[in-house]
Image (cartoon, rainbow, N blue to C red; front, side, top):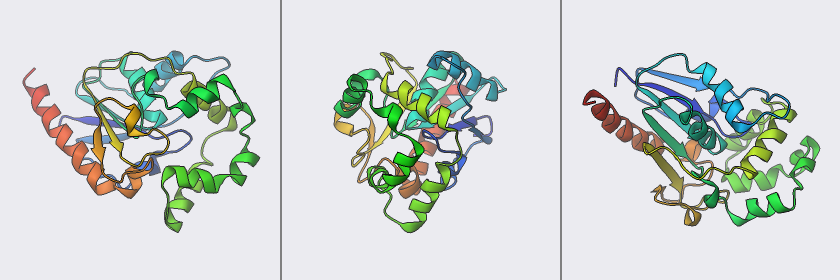
Length: 225
């Protein structure tokens, strides 16, 4: 896999520490950082700016978790990407669960302030499937890395995502116990038994094995092009 450059995109408001338990066998593993949105910036324009962090051409693989998976899809529309892998995410607007559609109809999310989120952390931890003290601390710590402007913008973009297509080279990995994006709403994901929305941490070994199997096949296909 010496010719593969992998770029990882974390979930909404999180950072590269989300991937630190994942063992990716590639020439180089890079971590794309979230940036603050510009006033009234569209998701497409934001994705174009995120691509400034992908400085090379060739055999590039994007791996995105949750909202990072949606961002990976948007970035792949703008630049040739040889493989897109999304984890604990969705591929198109019809896969949004009813709760998100309700949030779009009744937009209370602008009131999800930091104070409100701090008071409801115990609920978010449950939804993410975080059940150890270490995982809870890890999650809380990562939530402090991005600005309030980014978080508000990102939640709005996720709820209003209107995507109807996705790259043919996309592979979707989803847990059977994901409460944020339940697998029953998704089309043809690779299922991880008992995987929660936070399975990139809790099921790191299993996710690593799946990703590396995908990369082996992807490299062979790239060589034969």
